[in-house]
Image 1 (cartoon, rainbow, N blue to C red):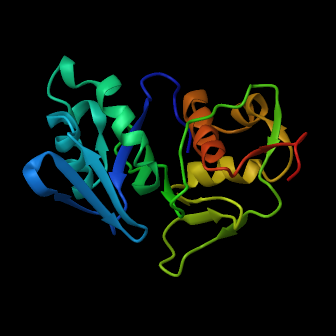
Image 2: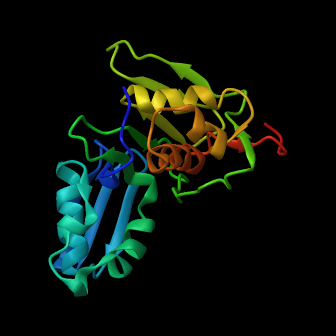
Length: 206
């Protein structure tokens, strides 16, 4: 499979973990989110935050599509969502109608997700303690480590290709050159793996 570089774009989807339940608290000016880790409270959430969380409870959403106007845009919603990072599944998609590339699932109440893009010439790799497994369902692959607060589900072969090239020290530039993928796709896959704590610099302890 080979992509043309033109017209292919990645996009970033947000959803709540399957066990999260969103309820309205006393007085109507509080949202309570209940999960395996207990209860998180949002005081006086904006209508935009309420709507985004409602949609995220149903499944992955593109934030821009869940916001109704300029006053609702990300600068007003992201601070609230960042507090709930341990409850949020982050999914990387691509606009080829073949489904998402990968999803990053939080495994700890301390999990936080901040996108990282390693420098093109900086050598990186998967830490040696990362396990690469195929679930019993036979659908996709899973990357996880006892040292990472996230599990990464690789839904498509493109994401698995990128992950496998990181089994040995390499650079983002080299990975992009080696695979038949648009650079943006490769860079975002590596960025998600790095944000999940599953990519490390070869100059750091692995």
